[in-house]
Amino acid sequence: MYMDDVLVQHLNLKDYSENEKELGDFRFGKKNSQSYKFTARLRKVKYGNGDTAWRVIGMSGTSGFGYWFINKRDELAKTYRKQIFQQVIDKYNLDGY
View 1 (cartoon, rainbow, N blue to C red):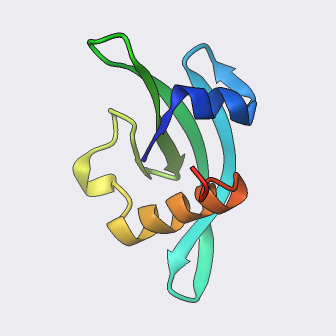
View 2 (tube, one colour; view 1 turned 120 degrees about the vertical axis):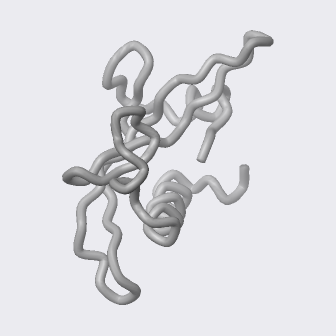
């Protein structure tokens, strides 16, 4: 999941570092049991044409996505990523964008 730079600036998120912003903690898990905590951030991505976007990244124990040091086998399943992305959309009311 990527967000446009203008949208991220509008959200006024807390800086984690120069190239990362904090999104907060979210939950994921099996269908009716979201029992695992996931800490999400946005990481700045620059494109060759000078445009900037922000990529949702994060970590939960040894699993996550968006970080380069995570092995493919340690990535969260597509269903769990969708759960987290939907929570980010709901928390920051991004449906209108």
